[in-house]
Every structure is written in structure tokens, then in C-alpha cells.
Image (cartoon, rainbow, N blue to C red; front, side, top):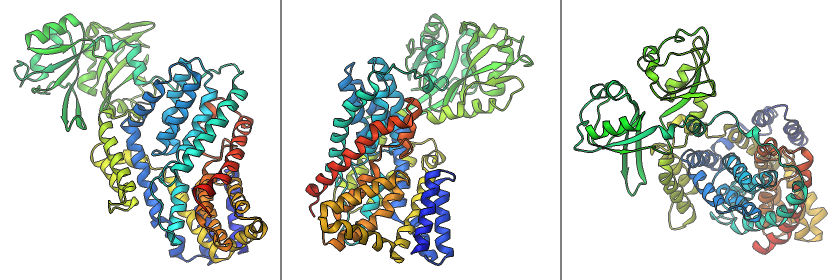
Length: 611
């Protein structure tokens, strides 16, 4: 027992000091338990085959698919757009929208998604963004209490109840608890954030702007005003001819940006979009969409001669397989002094030059005859892979920004309806008892469907959405609870809680478990705390002769509702820099909320789950 508690104490100290990565600390703790013979190899590695760990990995992929297709962004933007300029409406919608998304997407992903939207809405409403960003982080954790899959501690206590023979929780078993959390959060945060942040000068949010986005580049170079979209009908004379045969550049002075093929099935749910660079050998087919850059008059002439339907000033340029980026020509570049037509960008690099910025002048017309100069900034277009390869040639130019990182942020928004259907099907399988599918199976099916239906660019992109540090941490910490039980440490702690608080009644015991878990979460991750406290809460309830349900729910809630420190949860840390918060800001706002939430839950949980 002493050895186990020593290992746990050292692990907790290392977690708190952040000297080593948490997953490395957890693995070292497991190895120590193995070397001391406290755990057998099968017991030490049991966490890696645990359904909760597998389910969490699948949920990371499902959540990633929701983010990558822009579904979460669409839902959040529409809800927040309803607020107008009302501070109260804006506050409520930020909290409710974030909590709603957080019920199905990881709290970290939810905050990363909502952060720029909330800052933009605060600016539009002339409201101090500091009043919204901390509630944004807290609301993502509250939203996790709405569903079984909302946050890892929920899955942990579900597993503990099943192993103890109390049956499994339903998908919405947490819903009443989550609604209470949100109500308490709104009631406390609305006046408290106004009191703490309301009279402060609005902060500069420029630190959120990390380089030019694709949309900002389109706006800066006025590409929308210079791009036309042409649809190829069955009777068009362009059908069957190649780009070279059409001689679009020489005859009309136009640049073909891309040739797009769209295939729509099932009321726009099964939608496929294929973008192709307009190489000379690309053959035009009926139904193709051609994007042209150049004079509207010449575009009209080309469309008329080939019986094409034209839409001028095509708005909302979309970037999926093909993107744009800026490159700056260096003084030693061999392209300096050459006409753009002689540069061979298209033939050698499979890149189009859409515009040139020279000083404060933006040049978009007659680019072929333009002589390049040192310091010219070229707006280039191509596949993300080709743009990325340009970064390797530092002799002639410098690529501004991080194109491949920008490509990773591009949402496949035409897949959003499909992602919504997959998520709805997953939730239905987990909610409806008459569907004989285990929750972990439903999650695995949904994660595979996200990959197979193209909600990710490739399988590698799906794997990148998994937070492997969290997965390893959880899998490695689960054996710690086994060690605590085998050595009698759990019985000792539960005995202490029962002995000191049990005589005072189950409410006092519930409060002790809640605030003990809450205190531990300030030093350990919420998942690790839930793993450690679940067997203690269970044995304490059994020893006192009461239902373990409210005790275990107290563990799940208190492990997630930790607001008093910027380092308690990743969402708290995410908004710290953006909101220009300091440590005491979290103490002033988060600590009162954490204490009030604990008091309310101590009184409410026995009403929802009687002793």
C-alpha cells in the first residue's frame, strides 16, 4: 500500500509541476507498479484494451470529422448570428451553442472552433471579448455533462458501474445533471464576468490573427471580382476539347483557374467535388464547371462562342484540393527581369499566378507580359502539395505563411450534411435501446464511416485528430485504480471518508467525495482523477449502504467542473492568451463558480439519483 501511494504521490507531483508530459508520467507509474510486482503484466496493460479507451479514440475521429467538414462551424455561426448586438443574448447564445457542440465534440476542439467566432461577434456587438472567452471555456466543460460521450469522466464512471454490476448508463443519463450545470454557470457567470471584466478597457485581439487566411487573401486581391464561373452544357462546343485546343489564354487573355466536377446524390447529402488544375491536356466534359480569371468582357465572348452558361464575380471561392498562397521573389531569383509568360510557373511547377502585389499596387490584368521585379509578391494557385513543394526552394522565393497548415484547416463543407447524418446515426444507436449495438461499436462504425465517406482528406488526417497523449494517459492510469484496490488503498481512503463523514449522513459523504475529487482535479487531469476516485466512491457508497449512483456522478461532475486555474483543463488554457487573462482572473471568476457548483450538486444529485 505504501509503495502504491508513494508512486501515486510522485505521479501527482510530476503532473502538477509539468516537468514531464502527463502520458510519460503515467507510463512510468505503470512500469514502477510492474517492477515492484504490485501489478501483473496483464493487469498493467488492461487499460489499452478497455472499451472506454477505444471509444474515446473513435470519438476523437468523429469529432474531427464534424470539425473538418465545417458542420460544427455552421451550427455555431448560425446560433451566434441570432444574437444581434444584445450583450445578454450574445452571452446566452455563446454559452448554449458552445455547450451544445461540447456535448458531442471534445471540449478542446469546441473551444478551438468557437474562439474566432466569439471574438468576431464580440467585436460586432462592441462588447468586451474578455466577458465571453472565459465563459466559452467553462461552457465547453458544462456541455460535456449533457451526454454519455461528452467528456471522458462520464465514460469512466459508466465503466465502473458496469463492472460493479449496476448496469450501463444511457446516452442521456447525464442530461438532467448537465442542464443544472449550465443553469448554474449562466446564473453565476453573467453577473460575475461583468463585475470582473465589464469596466476594463477592451483588449486588442490582434494576437488572434496569426497570418493571412484564405478568405483574407481572396478579399485583399479582389479575386471574387475577377473570377467567373462557367457551366458546360451538353450542347457546348467546348465538350470533348482540351484546354490547349480551346486556346483560352492566347485567344481571350483569360486564365483557367480550375476545372471542377460535382456529383450530387440523395438530396445533396452524398456530394462529391473534384478539383483539377487546368493543365493543357485536361479534356472538358458536359457538366464541368470552369473557373476563369480575367476581363468580364472577354469571359462573355468566350462563353458566347462556346455556348457556356456564365456567372460573373463568382463569390465565395472554395478551397478543397486546390489552394492559394503568397510568395516573395528574392533578389537573386532567376525569374527577376523575366516576363511572367516566360517564367514557366505553370509548366514547371503546375502553379498558376493569379495576381502580383508590387508595393501597394495589385496587378491582375495582362499578367503574361508583366516583368517580374525583386520583392514582387505573387499570389499563386495550385494543389496544396505543389504549393508545399515551393517552400523547399529558398533560392528564388520565400513562401509566406504555412500553406500545408492552412490546407489542414480547410473544411470540406460539402461533406457537412453527410457528417451530420453519420453523427445522428451514431447518437441514435447509442440512445435507442431497441438497436442491439454496443456504444463502442456505434462509435467505431461512425469513425470508420467518417473516413470511408471522405469527411477527411485521407486516413492520416483522421489519425491526426486523435489526441494520443490523452489516450495513453487514460490507458496507463486505469491500472492505478487496480493497484489501489489490490493494496487496500482504496478501502483505506473510502474507510476514512466513511468513518469521518459517514456518520454525518450520505449528504456529507457525497460532499466529501465531490470536493476531494474537485481538489485532485486541480493537480491531475480530470480523466485520471475520475479513474482514481471512481473505485473509492463506489466502495464508500457500498460501505455506507447507499446507492453508488449519486457518488459516482459526483466524481464525474467534480472532475469536469474545475474552473479555478488556467491549467485545470485544456479549454481554460486555450483562452488565457486570447483573453489576456492572468492567474487571478481565474481565481476571481472560476473559484466562486467551482464552489457554488459543488454546493448545488451536493444538494441536487440526491434528488436526481436517490440514495
